Amino acid sequence: MTDVPALLAHDRDGVRTLTLNRPHRKNAIDRALWAALRDALSQAARDGVRALVLTGAGGAFSSGADLTAAADDTRHPLDKVRDLNEVALLLHELPVPSIAKVTGVAVGAGWNLALGCDLVVATPEARFSQIFTRRGLSPDCGGSWLLPKLVGLQQAKRLALLAETIDAEEARSLGLVTWVVPAEEIDKYVTDLADRLAAGPPVALAQTKALLNEGTGRTLREALAGEARAQTVNFASTDVTEAYAAFAEKREPRFTGRWYRQPPEDPSCAKQ
Image 1 (spheres, rainbow, N blue to C red):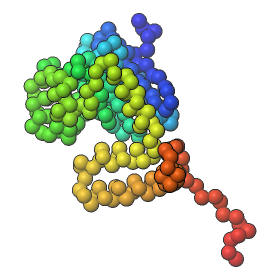
Image 2 (image 1 turned 90 degrees about the vertical axis):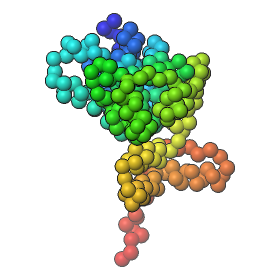
Image 3 (image 1 turned 120 degrees about the vertical axis):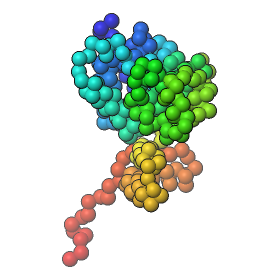
Image 4 (image 1 turned 120 degrees about the horizontal axis):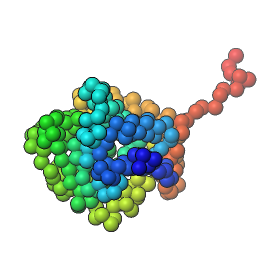
């Protein structure tokens, strides 16, 4: 089994799908898989990917960090956690929209990976748990930051302190899942959703995602200043011109994310 990649990558029409591929361990994440995720997320930001889907193989999303493998890892605990931190930051700061497609269990760091995506689509059979305290641990992979922002402090404490398992419908009612879709429909649903995002204006989507991620910790004055900077970046893209033209011509815009450049000035036309 050592020749089977722990992380699969598939590209289609600007959409990259990353699949956690350790189904024999319910996609528990060991040191090698953390490293593969780090490299894959770094590469996605450089490859012109327009949308990212994160999912798991074999009917599970992820059962969290692989504690069995961790027992053989002699590094200092802080060094181990840095692997998780790198991945959490890369996913959060990824300049393209991300979707978690969740079937089966999403537990511990596995659930927090899903929460780190911009949108979460789950099947009714999906189950979620901040399992950490059952293992004598506290939340990692960004969970202590994500949960209070998504559900409020009291519900975050309930989920983290009691380590309860909740189903997809309860997760949706709490705002931890965006859509619950029947298992036989989830592949098409996520494909259509990713295609819609991939067809969007990449510069504007990146700016919007960053504004929303940063907005909850800002004052209104800081948020308005951030919006002004983002709009300046957007207007430097040809997508704004394309959007206006498409509106006038009553057609769908074709966004590319290219930068607008003025033609160089002809020296012969310069004022003397």
